[in-house]
Length: 420
Ligand code: EPZ
Image: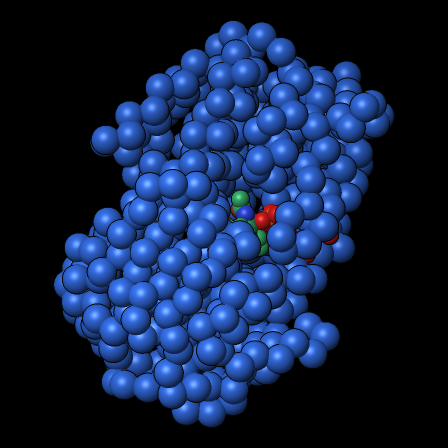
């Protein structure tokens, strides 16, 4: 298995362009099932998860051409050959479940393997199913597959017990072609939902309220094709911002939407980092030495994003004092704690909180990425640790970061991929 080798202690300096958002382009790829015309997505990062979604859509009969070099993807769902999403991709990537709503809307049926849990929790799909059921879908379970059928989805008022990102997206996509109007109450308000909505509206959908807890969709009979540029990835941006802070460096990020990073900028400034906006779409992050401790509570957007909790934990492991991190979105997103502890971090878990007692130094060690963002956190910790670290489980990192080692090297980092 590939490993990442990091020599710590080198401040990262220079410019980096943030790629398109994984969690915006994955639902958009699923949404291409809603139209029989061609769709071209731009600024699509070359990630393992994008390839998994491409394989899944091809298995459904979608024509997919992924121009990795130019970060574009061409999709055409004119001739779907099946409405069964195969086990493989769904097992590998929970976002595969996002084809459920579009397939139901387009074909009146869908059969999707039950998505497994993963390192950060059981991750049920009850809210997805409850919303689609209210819209007229009937479900049966069959050999680990969820089968859904409906003569025609009907617009309805759907209340989400929790502002689930995926459930909001599945219901939103189903509602686009449903008969009548759908209202989603307590909807997720993440920027990726707004981006998906802007994409769907550019194809002829009629959605208002995205980015607020109340989304209204007026069903239409069909969508046309189109071309759309994906928003920048706020989680990748946050990861590079922490890389500047934790390595004692000075990095300029290009292609950022500052408004999507309000909570992240505020928290990073609280740790003492210097953050400026030289011009729109650009952020400069400079370390001012050892970080100050801060308390963090992850929340649905616009609260602090759970996907940056592991990365901030790595930074706070070196703080001038004790920080309390409370993870409220996932029930056990702390698989990275034991691994950062191998580098000398002092972290104690108490129920949903992690008590991080900052240390002067971390030591390089051999560690294993437990999941995507935990893996990124280990790379960041290794950038600051003394000596060499080896991070295993690189496949997790490849799911959500395109060429992370090479891009950190372009900032002066001594980060290398070791062959298996
Ligand atoms: C999306 O996952 C993101 N993935 C996740 O990013 C992100 O961490 C998460 O939203 C929260 O922001 C994609 O967009 C592809 P949820 P999703 O449904 O949709 C519970 C990354 O690293 N829940 O908002 O799966 C669930 O168990 C990934 O890029 C239910 O109880 O997240 C969790 O505790 C990791 N029932 C909470 O809601 C449901 O039916 C949030 O889940 C659905 C969710």
